[in-house]
Length: 412
Image (cartoon, rainbow, N blue to C red; front, top):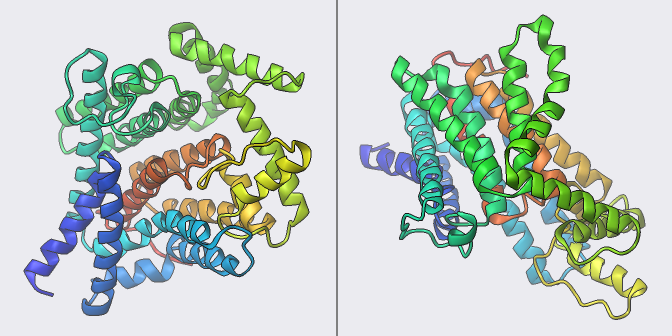
């Protein structure tokens, strides 16, 4: 392979790693470039010696292909309009970020550049939010919530979750710092990111993820004989967050009120009330066809149909609507098997991470747990920006881990 082709291959991977902290147009462009570059690399290039081992023994790439195959096969029975079904497959195409990075990145040096690009871009995003908070003009901020919620490119909901995840990544990767000053810089960035999650943004999922990320860090920091103590850490942290941050306290009280109103049948069209409605309808839909589901992209079609049976005046939800719960979304589309497939995808990543060096393994496991939690309250893998962020974060960490100084033993 020529040096120019090598440089282009790495440059695309670096650009993709940085794009999760840039406007959505860069996210879309990076996905296309990744797939094209990976196909060219597979067809024309000779992978490095580690690449075949990575593909042969890692579980995540296999399960990614199984996921996309399952959604593609469900086109034969989907109840959704075909353009909507194909659009949904396109959304789940972001899963390809992980295997394409594994194809494109072949050495420790290249993996370091990719990880560095991801980290620098996330720091840029964090600092941009703080500049908005202090009323400093940020010309590149394109979000409609930039001036009111301090979100730079997307919603405060997405960026709150991203900030909590980034805090965990920097915290667990600080042992990899080549010098003591850089070690403390990474720790400082981690605290800055937590400040974003709890102080700047009001997204409840971000607050929950932040609490869990701190709890996991404390769990790993304690000697094994004291780790059971961490069972009381999450409720204590939640109480401290409620008492310390006005954003958290307001959202906690608001959530309690919304759930109470929904239970008594007087819920309004609020975020929590809508979620509970969507979840209830999704469970009923899964019960109708638990084995095969209704096919890719079918959630809105089936939810609208169910609502019209109960409420003839129901106004149809638009294309791209989702139940704000990833597990139920897969259940409606692929049946109970879809939920198991999603759990299999998450488990495959955990299995691969456990083979890697401790800093990478802990950073990756933190991202994975954050994804599990986020999917309970949002359709995080379906959504364009936050879904790409999660896939990219996991892909970057898996790539760095597989090319680490202490290369993992890749066994079945």
